[in-house]
Length: 281
Ligand code: OGA
Ligand code: MN
Image 1 (spheres, rainbow, N blue to C red):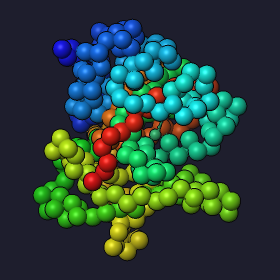
Image 2: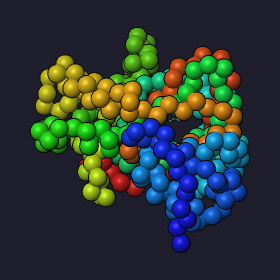
Image 3: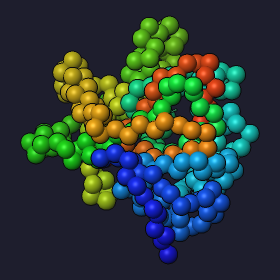
């Protein structure tokens, strides 16, 4: 029943380019959707160059992978969210500056929902320079730890906050801004996520604020060091966008970030988010 995808690895520990598929098959073929989920588990990020997947087809495709987010996304098609720094196109564009730091989506949920399973992004317009999206595997990050570290880190818990990620890009917040960030509840997650598949991954990123039971400074040093190792240059796939590219990532097994681009850049990516169904534990 499952189809086999033609995958060409892009970096040592993350990413593969998928060839031989057109937008229509991706949107309508159940067997292809199953194969995409399998390949995503293996590679973390799948790249479909020049696919020119329309917004409706993108939603149809994502819908085959799971329940999707239909929150209004500043776009006429339900299920599409506009990723742009242009406030005329997305009134909450300011928050998106935090995408310039390594992160996993959904680590500080409003109501404790698990992090999103997968995210689909398609390039409608690209930046003249900058604006690449980078990915690194948090499964590989765990696998590359030493045995003693696996043991020691396996019992730690980390507090994640919206403030931690926003502060990196807005270091001098106005009091009202700070108050808005603090309205978002913090979330405590184990540092090592034991997956129901038996695999393990690190839960790291700019939203990781401090380690429970450890001095703030010491904990932040540890978190920064782990994030650095996770995202060491040899472990990163950097996607340079062309109009019509589609990229999908396993949000539970990678961290990602955007390379900076100017706020007046035409860059516009259309995102569809597939909800997660596995709590971090
Ligand atoms: C996102 C995100 C990165 C980018 O949509 O969650 O982080 O390159 N995007 O725009
Ligand atoms: Mn993101």
